[in-house]
Image (cartoon, rainbow, N blue to C red; front, top):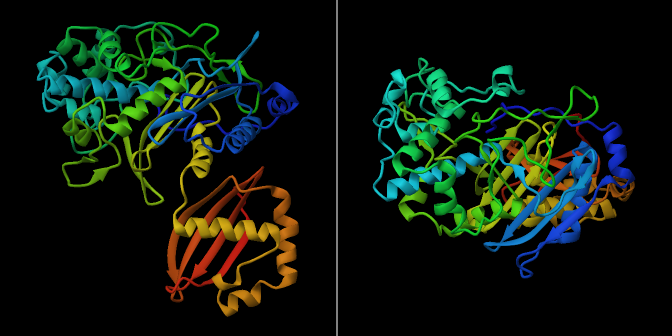
Length: 470
């Protein structure tokens, strides 16, 4: 879910890639817990490959493992002219990931009895028209029907000029609703600006002050700042954009006031990882609040959406995953938490064309223990790269296909690609009494797929690897 629209520009490989490969990539590292360190060498290699292939100026990551911040490292340049190396303490705007914190502020006030999730917005702000009947819960779940003020994938002229919360709400929240509250799901930054304004009314404090006292200080998030008043200054990150496949340009900063409540925060990945630890340990809010936060929203027709209170609520590869994306002018952010595995990954970057979501997928491949079917797919592919196969895994027909000559071809063509960076199940179907699994496989610079067919007893009839065209 992005502040800066729903899409991101396609990654480019031209002169920027060449700069990266000539040594433009710098690193800076921090560890908070020497125990439970991940496979650092592999992680560093994966990130450097992503940075070189996308041409992003920098990316900074933090990893949570075992419920602790295990690793943080920055790669590349926070600023290009003059060059300023990104470090583990460099701050980046997190844009819509800020919604996680606005929702938490509302929940903290609900716990204190200062408001209720089912309060109408009109209780706190008059003259909102149809939006007066929208509840705080509907604001936080994007089911309010309030029109989003920023659906574009660029900064429109109006947003380059400063605004105030009062003007933003008068212009956007007071418009006719796009649909009756609770009947549909539609992303709305305006709704979160209104939620942030209610936090200020109910608490009697500016939103940032409330968050500092009730969230950031208790969680030792020491580097958080408001990015809404103006662009970050050195040594923090500068945002970059590009037009088509053109050169990098400094991205314009949104006018002051526009990001309030929806996308106003900047921080280091380590600070965001400390927040993720609190989500895993459930250490800041009450158990009832966490239950409400992670409940998928139910529309009036009974259908559900994969969103809670400021969080995406997903099932991926048989695992629960929560978090949020962020995107703004020249910046992209991704925050992903696997609560049951007690793992989280943060990736912040100062570009707006190469999404860090794909990088998080590759890092999750390293960090998360594979499910049995994925572990088998990994081993089969690695065996093909060695020119070997465990014949006990395959049926007689499957073994007849995997001749010595065919295995030699597999080794000759797949071994040069290096280890798989991602093997992920895309879909399952049934045919001919067999379960068919289609795997996406990413290696260094190559995209492959494998079509696996097997019987209920676990024996495989085939595992055929080919190149993907996408």
